[in-house]
Amino acid sequence: MSNVSTCITYDASTSLIMMTLRGTANAQDVITFYQIAEQYIGIYKCNKLLVDVSELKHDFPASDLLSIMPAISSWLKHCFIARIVSFDGFMHDLFLQKAKRFEITAENFECFRSAKHWLENQPSN
Image (cartoon, rainbow, N blue to C red):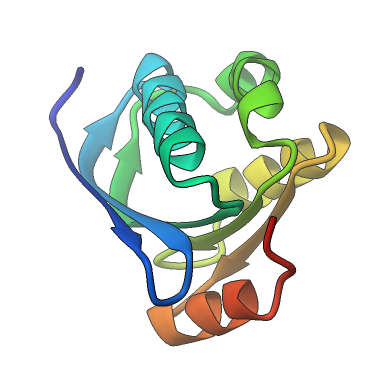
């Protein structure tokens, strides 16, 4: 992996997985992060994923999202994904656009509270 710090936990009180990513990631790192999340989804039998990428920098061109999304879509198709982003940037918008194309329910948020609230209001498995 590139220069990335990863923290992933399961919150039993809200039945959601929380993942925080910091540093600089390449396209393969992004695939690996969501593969790890998918393993947690399977272990805890939940369908809610909160991903904090507010301190993550992308070290890959936007065109790499065209290969990332097909790779992760089967793992995340039945999940609700709330992404905490530092600002509404092109890569974050493109991620959502491609997620919707692959029928992944995902939203970007500016703060933890609103992301968690949105997830809590989504149906559980």
